[in-house]
Amino acid sequence: MSAPAIYNFSAGPAVLPEAVLRTAQQEMLDYNGTGFPVMSMSHRSEMFMSILHHAEQDLRQLLNIPNNYKILFLQGGATTQFNMAAMNLAHGFKRADAVVTGNWSRIAYEQMQLLGDTQIHLAAHGGELFDYTDLPAPDTWDIAPDSAFVHFAINETVNGLQYQDVPKLSDGMPPLVCDMSSEILSRSFNVADYGLIYAGAQKNIGPSGATVVIIREDLLERCPKNIPNVFSYRAHIEKNGMYNTPATYPIYISGLVFRWLQSQGGVKKIEQINRIKAETLYSAIDNSGGFYTNKIHPNARSKMNVVFQTQSSELDKTFVLEAELAGLKLLKGYPSVGGMRASIYNAMPLEGVQALRDFMLDFQRRYG
Ligand SMILES: *Cc1c(COP(=O)(O)O)cnc(C)c1O
Image 1 (cartoon, rainbow, N blue to C red):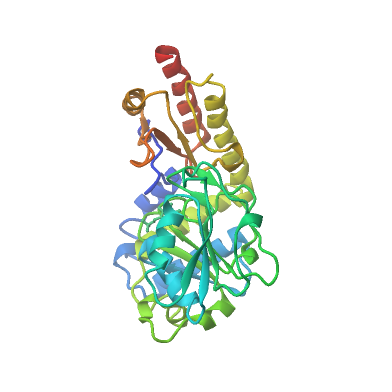
Image 2 (image 1 turned 90 degrees about the vertical axis):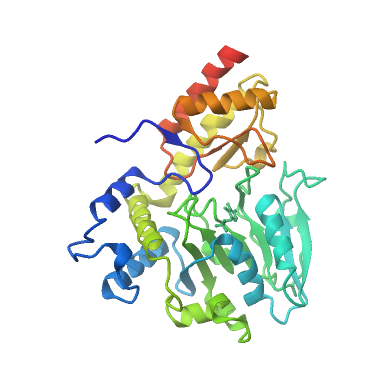
């Protein structure tokens, strides 16, 4: 049975590697000879504990996560992490810093303000009028050594912006807290540059429902005792990720994705392919003589979410419609941004990107 000839450019929940879905299909009714479907295993059973353990180990290997960092698979998505980060790490601090560079870091900044006594200071924002076409360089961020943390989103999924060089703060600066939802595992980086990293699974890891949290051990001491356990990193760590029932099936699929990534040569290898994929689309845009445009400053263009438009929103609609018929699915941009957005995460094969590039050329020949 061959796969249907479609390419899925969804921003999330996003495309998963076909090999992973086939394995899941084979193991749907009987996981590894246990007689159990993964979905019906107790999360405390040895069978599931082993799945969780291996997923953790493989993630640790792929990202080279140092031993003084803990890994959790929580529920609630990145949106819950906006608040959990503040609840756990800002207690007792007068100030925390937030960088706003697009849709998601803006929501994080707004939501963090709802909690308690800590002032959430706007350390930097993208674009003069928050138009989110460029990124403020980390050395221009207005941050303070006595802040609880500095929060930012490294890749803005909606707006199509991405920090090319991973920001690194000088010694004595507060820990970086990073929303990596739409780029984790797409390129190599140094985990030790961060205090806390989180990512909803449904962009570049697995199905929605699991949220990866990577936290430096010493920060757990900050978690206040008077917050509900379900929001406490420390409570989740103390119970080995089993304080409440984790999202067992999404964790299982995420584990399969980690193994698939290892079989592809790991993060360094996928990073090379991701670079070629992004270049393929941006050069098609740049070489279109203005037929297609991308408003993002060249140094801030995302390699994961390529946002582009034609000269008119009418023509954008035609593009999306005809692309659908050609098997290039879910290219419609985010409502507030409009135009098109091609999300080209790890699981999007180069062939899919080339098919989109070819379609763009053909569309321009017909409408240009
Ligand atoms: C999708 C996304 C979110 C929101 O994720 P939820 O799982 O819906 O909470 C937050 N941040 C970024 C960067 C995202 O791409």
